[in-house]
Image (cartoon, rainbow, N blue to C red; front, side, top):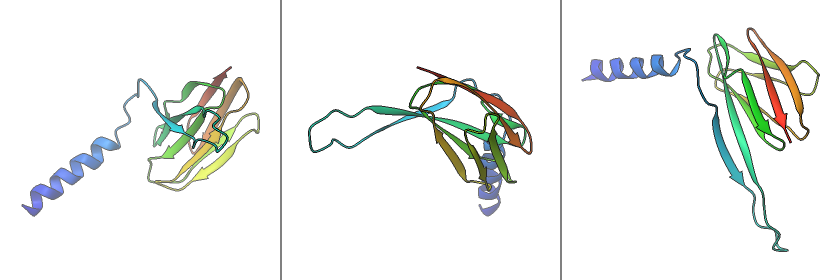
Length: 124
């Protein structure tokens, strides 16, 4: 019984660490609270990029103005994300994340340390 549980755990860990190509980004939305004045709130999309040993997945994203991109370190070593235009920069230990909300339309190329690069295209 213990051996079966251990085998299942190892299989799940290996499956979650695969470096397969992600065809669509993970997207979620957060809703703000309703202000006391009764104004309506706006849904803010959040996009996820996973850092794997092979680099970011997906590396390139197109998001609307106001979207937040969350980079999540799924690797066993530290990763850093650096905007080529010095707009954002953040480091992540294994299991940690870094996020940036894009308030202006444009193209934001970035590179990762230790490996990989990508581009966030923000449309308005």
